[in-house]
Image (cartoon, rainbow, N blue to C red; front, top):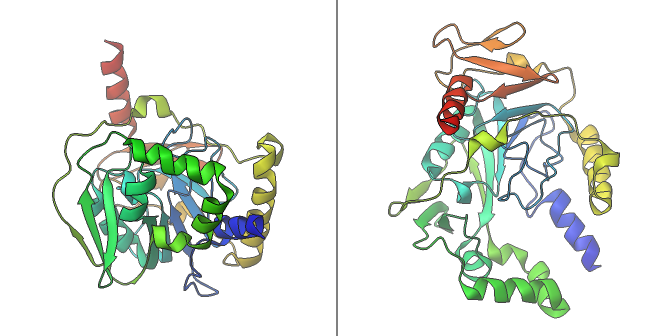
Length: 293
């Protein structure tokens, strides 16, 4: 029973989302657990990502490699946008929130709340997040180092079956579950201190469609379930993901040839394995040159 509940939380999420049958759905920061109803998924870190917790990113449907703070889609492209366990990682959550509202008409944000952070918190999570009067409240975490209490509660959850059962039966108590329509109400209280920037140079993307046989045994069943649900519930009809894209820098329409180019700001973006890589190539090259000096 407990195993079924865990699988249900992973596959279906913590809330039944208000997604209509013909809605076009985007998930931002899909990682290793894309929502089965997402028609398009996107993530930035294809390779090693210690903050994800699992290195195996899942690509089993139309996918875009991009920065969540510069979502490369046209305004109001999606009927619904899902963003789970991403906002707490960012230096600039306000930019993400504005981008979600720009590309989507409705959506859902999920994140560990302040109670979870104080019990299990991770050093790379940068914000305490709560919901008050249907408004997201974000407060910066003053210390990025993990406290001893974090390890104690995580050990309890991993080794004590009674505590683990309590946690899974009451998992909603530990999470922000926020569904929005047209507008995300939010307030950021305080400024973030100096944080460690993630090294994009090590994240050279080479995305490929996920193969079942390459996954660890414990992930194979989840992959099959998610993929089956996706093919059952996805928006029906042909979709060319390239027609939905816009330049992440200036939001202009893109020209497609062997790569994607912006006629306005002259940015160019690669396509690998039919997957658009919507990261600023010149910025990446400049970083690489600097790192070699």
